[in-house]
Image 1 (tube, rainbow, N blue to C red):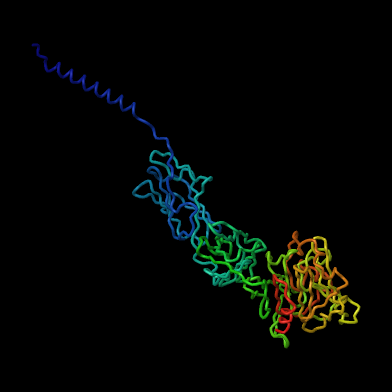
Image 2 (image 1 turned 180 degrees about the vertical axis):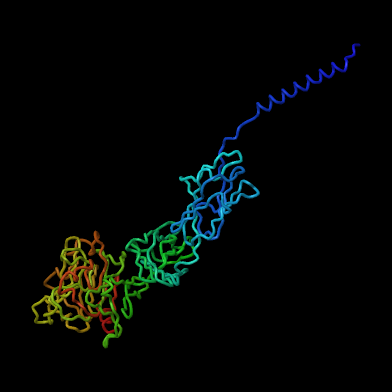
Length: 505
């Protein structure tokens, strides 16, 4: 056997080590890759779009890899203020977990929506790859909680009420409020939206500390609803936002089940325009603030409504107040009128600019000179038109002539539409007056369509025509002033005995 020398063994070992190093070096070079990906945010805190964030909240971003500070600014922009933070400042902190970046903006404004933007390069990964900044398509936004702002004192209907109105909502605040921006929405069964009103619309009325929302379409009887109000739809005097209502429990109610009788509307007119029938068909002032309906004590009738010149009241719109050709209908009104010329409307759902317009008008006509039997004027009129047909009941043409209505004395006027007999009955002080020789004064077959304006849908109006403009458009009519009491509307034909009973009461 041949034995190698120590020198030869050393040379062989050196060759093996050299080859191994070469192999290892080549393998390492083959597996090496360069990181060129930009860091990406995997979560925001607070979550984008959230509301009610504390004004002292920190803002936290979590990345998909470790990051370090670069150069640039972080901008926190609100509706009334903006904060700009240099990323190099102590207000920006990278945590022990270098994926987490905390921004400390200090105290923010309350009731404010903020948007956070970061300049490209404000943060980089450890190899210097830049965070590319905010995504304009998906901005980081949040809204701070209110530490002040309007405070609600009461709601109508009250939260949880079982007797809500079909026609309006009302909020009362501690101090005066004004319109902001946003919507008020009403939801019914299965969270279905049944109405939405922009606070900017005329349907939302601000009256110092009160907000009244008038609904274009009435709600249903005996039905559960809830209301939402956008944050900022209502503002206080300093511009602070009312935080609104978000869920189904903050303002929920059930509407009234209704009167359950033939009495649709009953306005006692003792101290306001509230309906006492159970249907909550409250009337509302339709005139300007300088000509509102007033309430006084009358020596004969007690508490009554005083309709000063230019004032009038409007009943809500509802199918029960849209009479059809087949619907029995009656109304009963107490009035005390001065003598006045022309033909001012007293109760109407029609445009009285033309007698052919659909609907009803109760008005005086030559009331300043009509004194009842023996007079030559018409005195007062009940006009009804529908579908092109027209009826005219005129006090001065009845046989015998009906008493005067405009003599500065209290009178009760009752008008009855009996669709079974197709006869119009008109009473004053419980006594009926008719003109048997003139079918156009009483025969309901004269009407060829419903006696309300389907195109204009004018409401029943007290002390004006349905448009609210007829009396106001004439120098004589606009001065009409007088008193009204105890208005009742029925979806039945009152009998003579029932009319007598109303007069005696």
